[in-house]
Image (cartoon, rainbow, N blue to C red; front, side, top):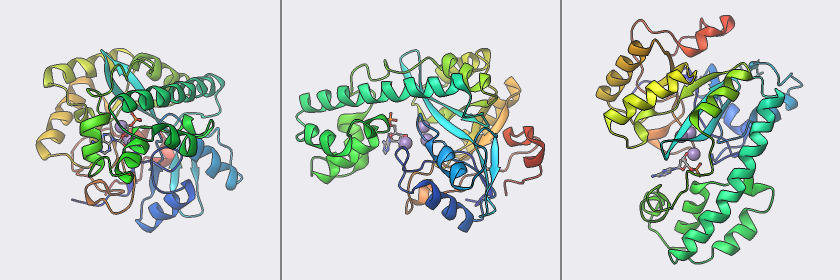
Amino acid sequence: MPLNFIDLHCHSSCSDGELSPSELLDYASAQNIQLLAITDHDNVDAYLTLSAELGLDASNAYIKTPQKVTLLSGIELSSVWNNHGIHIVGLGMDVTHQGFQEFIEDQKKRRANRVQDIATQLTAMNIKGCDEFLAITANAQKSQAIGRKHFAEFIVRTGQAKNISQAFKHFLSDKKLKNITQYWPSISQSIDVINQSGGTAVLAHPLKYHLSRFKIHHLIKDFVDSGGRAIEVSSSMQSQESTDYLYQKLKEHNLLASVGSDFHQTGLVWQALGKFNYCLPNINTVWSQWPALASIQSH
Ligand code: AMP
Ligand code: MN
Ligand code: MN
Ligand code: MN
């Protein structure tokens, strides 16, 4: 699988990633990434922190860092469509836009409420120690950034599941946790706030929701009708057949292409930064909307 110079989907420790924002930036630089968007779940703290550290204006869609990585502002908004949890990535917003900031504050509150619900449901499934976990890990401030991956790590650490994927399978999937998508805004609300703050809404990893092709077709249609403009045609663990299918959808709806690994941590070969299949001809890319970024080649 080729290594690419662009990665527009990854996570820092501001959500469920391993590396701090500055570690992630250094790591991207070491991997020769030229254009990076950190797309943490429901917050833009990484972009705010890094631009502040560099003395740069966070209201810009992108900043140039001394590590030679151009950082495009990014987020991954937890959203709901027909009771399915769907992720909308936003790229290139003015993250200081008032409506956007208010939306993020609400999103953090929803996440904090949801954490309590998850703990209650896990306890009912006989998982021990959820209250202690919350008291230590998810104190009032941090619970805004806590998600299912943190719970999965806690369940494995305490020997209540063999590994992360077993923890998800037995306790944390959308099927095991009742009504867990109810907290989130609709995809059209997420798309609206991204558009209003000058960004581009991207349908994240369309094939990772375990939806039938029939439902994906309708999801993409509703996404486009709501003002969504791009889809991730490449993400890490994806077959050529899947990429071909998404390429067809992209052409059908005249969408822009986005690419990203959904990197969370080092050491996972199937989800490494900059690693995804991407060899599509005649394609309009999401980053070429910004003239200064248009010349960056993905590979
Ligand atoms: P949340 O934002 O709380 O809904 O958690 C979603 C996150 O959980 C995803 O972004 C992944 O990082 C992680 N995740 C979901 N399913 C799995 C899985 N089967 N194995 C490992 N991580 C997963
Ligand atoms: Mn995640
Ligand atoms: Mn996602
Ligand atoms: Mn992600």
